[in-house]
Length: 364
Image 1: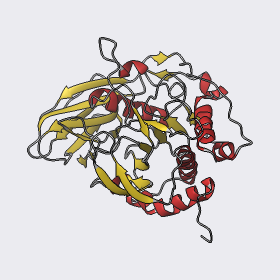
Image 2: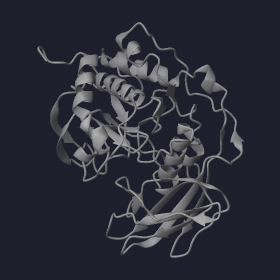
Image 3: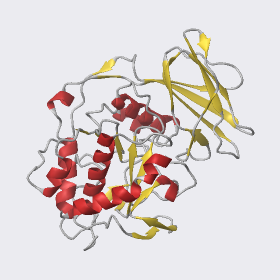
Image 4: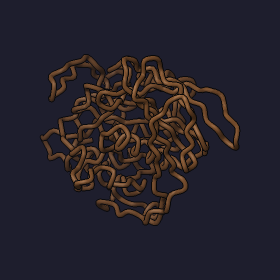
C-alpha cells in the first residue's frame, strides 16, 4: 500500500459520516472541579467519572471511595497517570457509576489536591455536529479493504465540544504542530465502565485532558473501543484528515500532529489507545482487529517497517531512545500501560501488521 493512498484512505473513512452517526445528539459534558481534603465532596450532579491531580514528589495516586444510594463503598486505589499536567501528577479517570459523593485519600506528601467530577449523562443535548469533510473510501484498494466494515468516528461523530480547545480570549490552547512519523505507540486508557456509551467515555477523557490537565485537547491521536470503533482524537486542523497534516504527496513524509501520550517522546509518535484496562483481561477480538488494521494504515502512511527497531529522535529536544516501530507505552516509560495482556500481544500484532502492509520478510 502506498503511503499517500493509506493517508487518503484514513482521512476519507474517518471523515465520511455514516447515516447512523450523522443524526445523533449527545449530552453536554458537565464537570465540577473542587479542591479536596479529608472531607467528602458532594457535587450537584451524579458522578460518571472522577479524576484527581496534585503537586508533590510522588506519582502514587492515592485512593477514593464513592457514595451511591446513600451508602459508602470501600476504598479503591486510583491508577497514576503518566500523562500528567505540567508541574503536577494525576490519576487516570475512574468510572464512578452515578455516584453522588466522593472522598479522596491523597498520597503522602501530596499538596494542592484537586478533583473533578464529570457527568456525561444529564446535560442538555447538543445538536448534531457537522463533519469537517465527507469523502468516500475506495474499498477496491488494499487500504480500503483494511478498514472496510469498521466503525469510524471523526470528532464531530463522537460530539467533541470544540470550545474546550480554546481559552476565554478565543485562542487555541494547544495549536497543532506536525512532525514526520517515526513511531506508533499503543496504550490502554484504564477507564471503560463497560456500560456507558463508549463515545461518552471518549468525551470524558477529552474533557479531563483538555481542561483539567490543562492541555487543550485529548492526548491520543486515535482511540478504539471494545466494539472496534475507531475515534479521531487530537485535532489536526480543518482539512478533515485525522492524525496527518493533509494528505502526503508521493515521495514526501507523512506529517502527524503532535500528541500528548508519552511524556518527553511525543513528537513524531502516534498514540493509539484502547478503551479499557488490560492487566488481567485481554482486549476483545473486535478491538484487536481494529487496532491491527489501524496500525497497518498508519505504518503504510508513514512508510514504516512494523518489524523494525531503531533509534527514535525527538525533533524538539533531541532526546533519543531505542524502541520498536510499534511500541507499548511501557517501552518508553516506567508504567504498566498498555496492560500485561495487551503488551504480550504486541509481537503477534507487529507480525500481522507487517503482513498487511507487505513488509513480512521472505520466508517468515
